[in-house]
Amino acid sequence: MRVLIVDDESLIRMDLRDIIESCGHEVVAEGTNGVEAIKLCKEYKPDIVLMDVKMPELDGIEAARQIGFHHEAPVVLLTSYSQQDLINKARESGVYGYLLKPVREEQLVPTLEMALGRYHSDAQLREKMAELEQSLEDRKIIQKGTGILMDLYSISEEEAYNRIRALSMKKRDSIVNICKALINQVSK
Image (cartoon, rainbow, N blue to C red; front, side, top):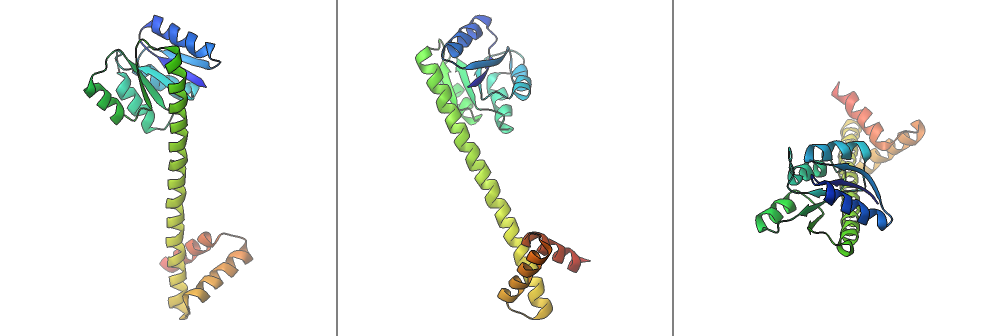
């Protein structure tokens, strides 16, 4: 794993680095506040961000919200506090894990690995959703194109689709593109 560590306390960053590197993972960068976290995340593209909650300039929860909004990396938050309202805010910000300080080696890496696994699962779901949305849009275009031919030539839906498909093969272009061209032609 390529890890970004963000904490305003240098001793904690050093301890976290030691644990992460001793387990065979790489620390790609370190930051001291939420603003740096966002900047470093864009610059280094880490696999995961390990970040303190309470920091100057921009706290970890808001930084996590911004990092998560752009799907740049999963965030695991660190805190010395276990207050319920803080936990709720962290959950709402979209973080993938929450650890209490002092962090023990036996909890850190498994938490990071679990967070990274959940993040990848979420990424696959987002990709699948985008594919489904595109498929739905394509179907609407094909249906509209087919409808135009049906009205124009008083033919069945199957015949209209077969004509579009034949033209698609002849022109070596997708059925969707043929239908878009047909729609554009009729719209003029």
